[in-house]
Length: 174
Image (tube, rainbow, N blue to C red; front, top):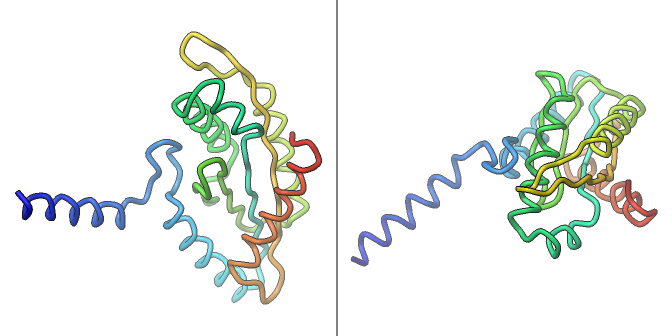
């Protein structure tokens, strides 16, 4: 029995290392998304191309979880991810950054254009009616945008979006 249990643990770890798509949101897993960001940052730096990262968080995560449970919040995240996937180009990249954050890497996009894109997504999500079983709700999102500058690393880009997202949340969200 112990050998069988160890085999199961080993196989679970192996699958976790090679899974690329987050089952809940249909976007890249955090691990794969961070690797993609690192690769795109290096490419953009080598060829002096524009690159922007947008971090999108559902407002009031704790309230949503308290009211609808973890499953309800997961359903909201899945629907928000679906909306975001419908707003990106085929060569942009979407990934899960955290349990309540989705990252969008917009290649060949200046920070000002990424801000406009994020604003469009924000208003589109706010206008959607989401279904949670027999209930319908509306949610809002906040976004942080950071454009890449010469010599920036992946950590700088992630830190910039995180700071801007935190500022948006502190200013009331949405």
